[in-house]
Length: 209
Image (tube, rainbow, N blue to C red; front, side, top):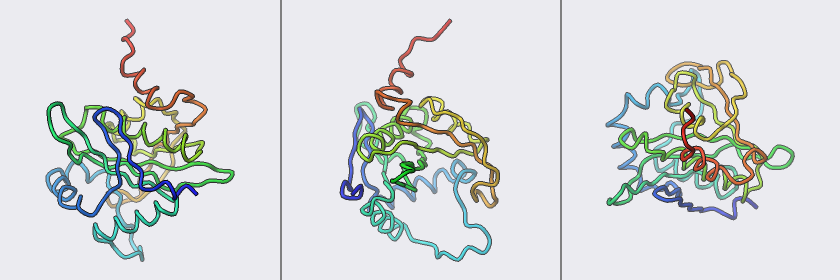
């Protein structure tokens, strides 16, 4: 069972993926308070008439952890260790919708504290998550859905070399309305050496004149 692998901790250089935990709440809330305008245009919202009750941070962590143990999702916090500094809670990467059988796919979502943006943290974190899904869970396909206006998130999939697959209209309720999203795909067959290795090659390749 995929769930038997949880909890999972992964590290590559200065970036670590580890299970989201209840005691992250204070740091999570502080980031959101400090940078509300950064997140608001991209945060999912509840559509009119939604019947599901809202959850506290602790309830969300408990629910996500339960799903992870059942092999349905991977709710990771992203820790970053800056040069000469201590590890900090910098964001999240969540693998959801894990399906096996004839599908073998999942979806990935992510966010980063804006004070740590632009350092390659999220591309590295998503690459590690994708490699785990391909190598350990045996998945074939990872989808990343992004609002076409979200230039920062689009930069992540470009660095990863994800393939653009098309636009899904009114795909998700975000920032108070149903929003179009562009879908990008990573497939195990397209990165035989692994997504992390592919990312490292792209980041260190000499610029073409």
